[in-house]
Image (tube, rainbow, N blue to C red; front, top):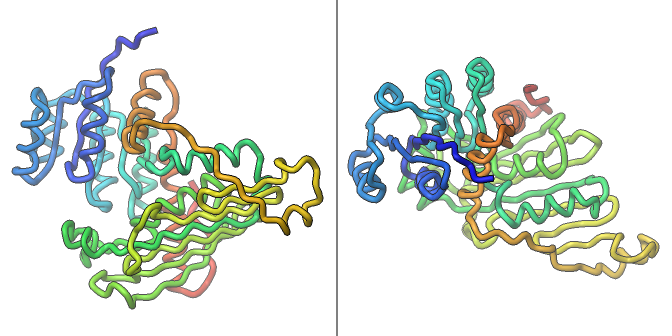
Length: 345
């Protein structure tokens, strides 16, 4: 049955927010009505590309003049909670770019504001909508790896050019922990793949990218629900750079393993003894997930379609808050040298 409802959408922050703008503009059930950015030149460029939209220099002005059903918050990390709460209180559903917030206190305020407003809060952890990671999740859900006992995600990047172009990323006034900023991608996937974080240990150093105000290399080791162990490494100064893919994934389970695009499972070998199969290391290619749209567009399409059909979008605010809590537990452990249990949501 054709959807007849039209949702009125706006985007705050037109840097990475371009992905949200394009996704809303392309969705048949969305009317893109508002664009908000403090950069007047950038805002004017988007208004020229998307005639019929109205531009605003501030969120307050836009909320005062527009009736909005959904708002994307794609601004610097420390602004997410304050802006998102304003939009929720104005009656809009909200999708915030990751990480949800930079503090536990803001995460609680954000989640509680969504509950009080009776509106949905989603976190745009777009890696969950990327075909590479969807393929891994599908294999896990099918049980081909059995119980995960070890998961490792390494995000080796050099952020110099990106952070020079957008200096807020390395702002000393609003410090951004590497494991929470970019590393939230990997920590969120770790939780999605292997289970909830029960305890975290962390370490870091500040040797490779000294323009960054804090540790530019951070590692988190996690005790996971069910007994598994996880590890996430995030660097901002690896000379090897991002490459493609930019995130290394290793998953070991009681029945099989994934190493990036390679898959092995005992289910492929008709009851052959595990020790015999393991010696042969018989990898197969990870079965791909076919997807025409980008992960950013798939994220927004999921958000909109859930609103249209009365479903809860995922990952929701509490999921995003749990990823924030796991990352900040690593930061605290790195500071104290002691294991830390993440805040609960």
